Image (cartoon, rainbow, N blue to C red; front, side, top):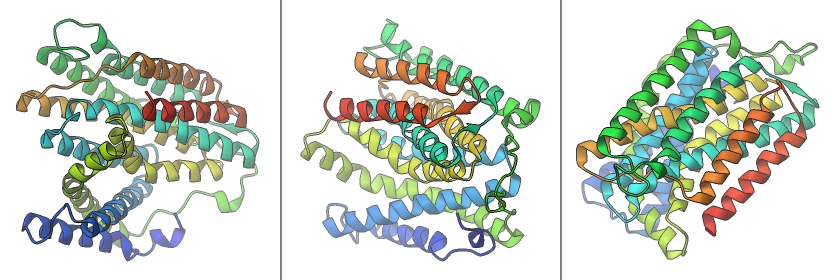
Length: 368
């Protein structure tokens, strides 16, 4: 993000949510139809722009508070978007709504742990040869992430109290509580107990152009503090408008329902993915690792408990267990991530391995 964006307020960052809000109001007043092609196109553009606006304002606040709290703010913003999109589709009650949470969370893990980290390592390694980050931070994050991912996406396949690939309501509530506690402890460690683990590694001879950006002006920070929740609300409302057309389009294309989860995860993670790659290009790989692993942890640790609470309160089924093929991909991703991030140094080769796994994930999603 350009430095002048932190001293001024870009027009699009408030105009996009405003246009989206007007469109949502027209829809709920019955003045426009969500089956109209022009409305769908305009709503899609407004949704994408509002997502970028949301993450822009989150990044402003992140720069103001500094690392590692900044990464947490960005992860929280993305997770709120993810939860809003998932719940919107769940409450619509269409076919496949019981598994949209699983598909979205799994897709988010594949995107951040393979696509985003792969691009960071390939592009950053190409420019800086070998990059450094704090091993303690990666080890702590991966230990919690592996526990959360296996508990939510694999364990449901091996319990008998619920339906196929499902926890019973009691199991779902207890597992959700465990997820929240583990994520809360991780945030405590990241921000207070061992904050130094998650700080940038000093790089000798760093280019002055790669120096950290100055904190934004107070006026800009105040505007972003107001616009962030407003932008998130608009995105959630607009997502509800587009949920039915998205499912119809996927079905018409003859693609599996899991593609909906991939689309949702891509939409909400795209801006943060760009921020991660940009940090790697500036030789601040620690920031990239914080963003990537923080997003993956928040995607499970915050999303699943909220979605589980909605499912239990509304009496809806929640399918969480992965298929055998996707389980293999999850385990392979966790294994390779542990090796890749287990030395504190990265190269282009490791990035290409992650990108290869991501291509296989896309193939299995489109052609199960």
